[in-house]
Length: 338
Image (cartoon, rainbow, N blue to C red; front, side):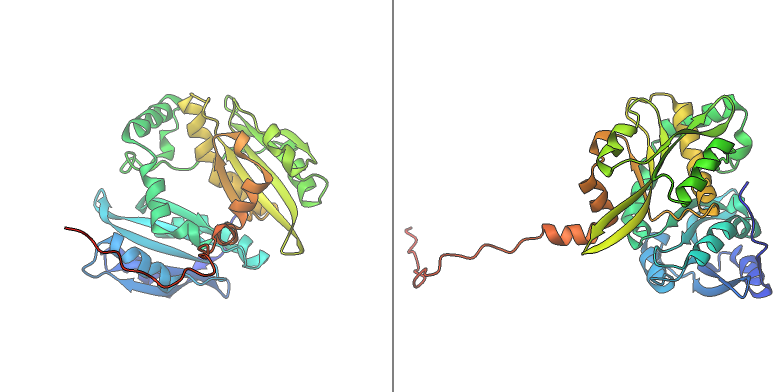
């Protein structure tokens, strides 16, 4: 399981969390101050639906460079309790210490609020990942038929304990498979700049995450390393010049090729992903950008640049309206015949 920081909610936050059970609040902002989890914002429930309050809450609570957690209440309920969405906001511009602190304290935050009440989670490092349309798209992507197949696999594997029994038709709990010593060593090498690329694979029978390959590669070789018939986790340090400066960006790629048909395999890779990312961060690897791909051939240097600098690339693609001829003469009116 993830390492804990020992940080606990203070009395004021405990009171607010208790009051939240009544539906009093639409959203609660939680920050780490003086080694305590503190309530730093409350949004009282009004007449609007959760969809209409979404943007207003984020505009009020999210600060560009400051990490926080946001508990956001849906209108529907899980059994007799309200269903909540947990935002974990850890911006790219935050200090390394804060990134590690918030990533390691999230499990504690969930336990004290009540894990069973959290039906959705968003871990965001950029503002675009908090966007309502982005969130809605992630909810729609899984069809009911796909959810049924996943649930069947959980039952076959006898790990339905990871699924909240009162919310099994909506959300599946995450899994945390142990990482082998070889994979752990490769992560240390990555941190020490001994390699810039690692591919991790999952041994489903042993329920472990193992090292597949660790090496130094050029960005243009990345697509050739990603398997087309098997899922994988990929860690790549992308060193490049941008705006006349040398940049170093750590990219995590979750590859799930279209040729993979096993629901069990898809489910396990998806369920272990967040815990594995947390584990990487605990080893000192900060992930600047997370990507999910289904076609390795689309991964190129330009593709990665577009993902890392989306706004800058969008601005470059804009173009001015072409100017007309230098001398058009006086505009003339054309008479329309009946």
